[in-house]
Length: 297
Image 1 (cartoon, rainbow, N blue to C red):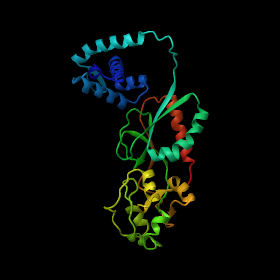
Image 2: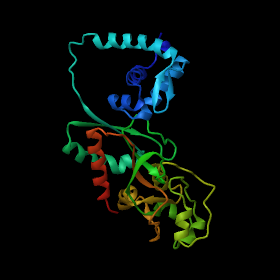
Image 3: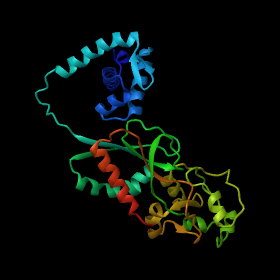
Image 4: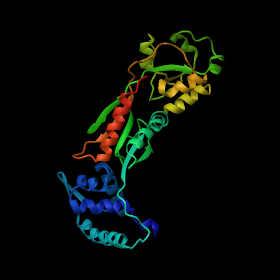
């Protein structure tokens, strides 16, 4: 029985889109993004193995199957909504869904989130995680923080801040290799690799005509990369807000004054362009911009 039942959130998306003849308007009513609604419709069609909509310019129209299925869906949803729930308290909760990279969430977002909650206690925040450079589609979120090059077509994109990157290593690891006094001495070291913090731009600033390393441990999470440095796996690139606690505690040390002032990747605030953004979402966007534009390193 369970395998035959489509997801309820996909059914409600289908009903709303059919009622309005528009994914955008239906998404606004359901307080989700148009792409999230499209995802739910695709999920339903995959479950049914049938198309329920055909696109007609900017509007959508039901297929013949979709018209017949809509009657069944509306009857089912009406039965669920009309069922009496004596202990249920009706409440219009203001909610913002935000997706963030894990390292940003740990070091930059959670320590500052209390200030938003203090200003707007009536707004609930739901936090989701995704992997930078890989998951690049807005789905269920209202707002995303992305770590990348900032090239996100058809999305509203605002840079939050720029922070230099520099090389660090653990004291214990440095004892196992020849003395590291200049950037050129890194030829004796294992360089930890990451698509998020490539070495080649830093090499150029350091005056080294070296290519991007192609061997060695690769870690595509900035927090985990720093943990790899701490545990002696090699030398890595990091940024001040990630490393400051470990540097203060002596777990890692900065190797040189050389730093890359404008790394190829930065943090961006991203959301879909919509005719009207919900007020609570706009408040959150304003808070994010104000909070991180004031951040200095």
